[in-house]
Image (cartoon, rainbow, N blue to C red; front, side, top):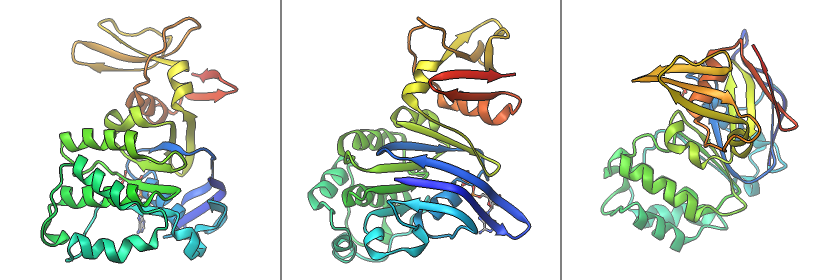
Length: 284
Ligand SMILES: Nc1ncnc2c1ncn2[C@@H]1O[C@H](COP(=O)(O)OP(=O)(O)OP(=O)(O)O)[C@@H](O)[C@H]1O
């Protein structure tokens, strides 16, 4: 569904952001796109959406080059930016203009999601709060049922209740054949929903793995004692330490803490974690 090969992208000729980025995502589901500030997550979503063009290399989404922005392709790929500014139109008018562009748009699904968000839309969309506008946009994005949905920080601006609602909505209403790529720093809030995790840093793909493998191969432990050398990474928390370990055969499976995993991968470059053929190699 997404294929990047030796992708090169620069904002400035002398400052490459992506020098040779490779990434292949061939299954639908929810992919968490993670990385530090400035790692290039938004830029990558723009490239996938055809809003920016590669300098070199291959960028392929749904079998086509995004930069061509063919009409039939645009009807299947939707990018939702972090900041939304809705127009001064009523919901009905806005929907009547936009929804017909998306062949699989489901009005009943849109209404069901708006209801689950406990959203009452009266007056012009531009008069809604930022969080309310974002909910309308997310409801619309899901109701289009496009094949590839690119969401930049979807939960930013949502209150704690709405974030819970969003997680429930995804679980209930995401079409089985849709790939959702979510760029986010909210890994503790959204991480449990990811089927795959992609971490980029300094223009490179650091990590791409399914959460199923991560849960099986790593474990997280809290302790009052400082973790020993067998910890891949640890950090102090109130009352002790939180540490990431390679799971031993027979260890009970735990749900991986993606925030710790990401810190381990990004903040300690001397630790390189490879997951190949379901084996974990840690180089210290
Ligand atoms: N329009 C632009 N012109 C020049 N440089 C840019 C532009 N947009 C982004 N950059 C640079 O590209 C790099 C990646 O930016 P990007 O917004 O893609 O990162 P990000 O991972 O989404 O960051 P954050 O987590 O802070 O949102 C940064 O160094 C940024 O300064």
